[in-house]
Length: 310
Image (cartoon, rainbow, N blue to C red; front, side, top):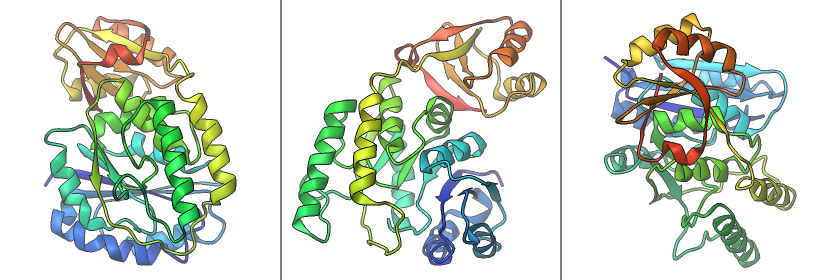
């Protein structure tokens, strides 16, 4: 039975919360079918035994990929790593505490029938209602700043629950640059600028104690990072090839070129293989084998194309 859904779970010092988060997720995995779900767990340099706690909590699942590195790089970096490793056609991003009810996952997956990227929204009447009026007002102002900066109409860009086609996730994994909490805005920007259909879907959530987000400090840092997103060029290293190559053929060629975690943007006249920033040497080899040419394109050049991960 083939995989249908990859769930990427990033974690930093979540040893005390990961088991409860997995318990909230398991009923939905059972609903989809355990043989169809891949969990990609990425430990972001935890120092409290999170990898061992996650291994124990996920031990009953048939398809688990565990990634761990020694230094804390940030949630955005962890999710990019997971997006490059995920193999199912649908990719879901979920926080370790599963504060957003995992029960929303099947509905978000169904929404991909008419969309490419589904962003969970905790907002009610245009605002996320926190435990204090001051925090609610601050959140509304923050969202307004984000919307104006990256050009989106979403009323909740920072929700930890997102579902997308694997090609979109792979694009974000390859091109993303923001390592910490502003990565949400960057992924939405990348998807929108490349012509993907981005929609929001209402979700319910519980404010689980123990979050590593420091509201005042991290909000200021996020605003600085978000301001830089539309100013970044996002030059896309790519190999232009004739259309029609199968994903298996592309994967075989990529392995020979010692490249992995790639994305192809399908078009009527030619396809574009999207490379990582350091992928030019391998891309030259792929271009030679596939009868293509290596070069640079812009995000706008991906509009009207279908993204597929391989």
